[in-house]
Length: 452
Image (cartoon, rainbow, N blue to C red; front, top):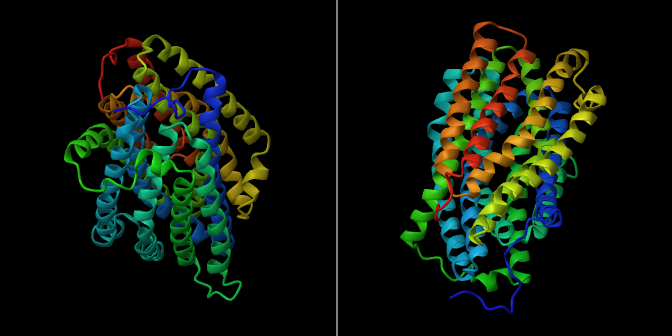
């Protein structure tokens, strides 16, 4: 039974006001931890260039599980948004509880993989023994934050899917503030703490994830979101909903994982080129995370609004909606592009790595800034495909893009030994390979009639 009209409607419209009302809080929620991540890397850069280089490898590794969680979140978000559009509010709490159960199971797998399989992989692939050992030690600590990250991500699916993204910033702000304080304290040994160096960053991140999770679920409780959707009353396993979530989410999770695994492969190739090249590339990852916050926010908005609009049976409004979201996304990315190119040296100087780092980093930064423009368009169309419920199509699009990405990276960086600036052009090629098939699929209208 659907909720009565006494509660606010969960159905959306396609106005710019609605787009910004959903996307800007998401952007802030993404931006805050990215600010934290950049500051974390500044601390590690002050510790040593080797610590900054290791942070590149470990950060991408942990991101593999982070995007697994994000894929589950995106699939669940599309389902919740569809139920919101259809006004089937009674199913939202069930979907949420089953998503949490899946999250806990996957986090156990991630921890086991990190302890028993990942050391074998890094021992085989990394050349520098010191970097190799420090990477494995760090990850065996950092991975214990995974259960909290997975469950924390479920709040995205709930709050974005029910058009309450304004509450996202509270949990992420708490996490970021705690992480920055503990990074400074535990890495360097301030405020009475023992100086732990690189591993201090791992402990700081885990504690911050725990507190961020606690705060956001207190918000859900006191805003009576939990009571409205009966989130905490249905934690028995319901296999039909587990299957529904996995059918929708598994292709997206696989898509995201192969994307980040390919990025880890890219960083391993960069490691073969030396510590400085790895440190430069880690800085570029910071740029994608920090300045891509608005892009990913509009992408998430595309997913949830497309699914909601289809749930209202407003099929003819889907493509106009995507175009409108894309224009906003590109506009923000263009501002970032201009700022990065005008102030390239100022941005890279915050890492304090010297002239060699700057001279190698600035050309790479110019390539990355252009890739951000393409990313701002491609992610909106790709996530629109997710919103239609055709997540298997997402997987095939991603697989095609990754094959091209890996082939180009290996040939330019490892085989031809070209400058890493040429290697980073793989990002431009990657986003083009995602954009074209996503755009063509949405335009084909073959997604009409898909029921999720």
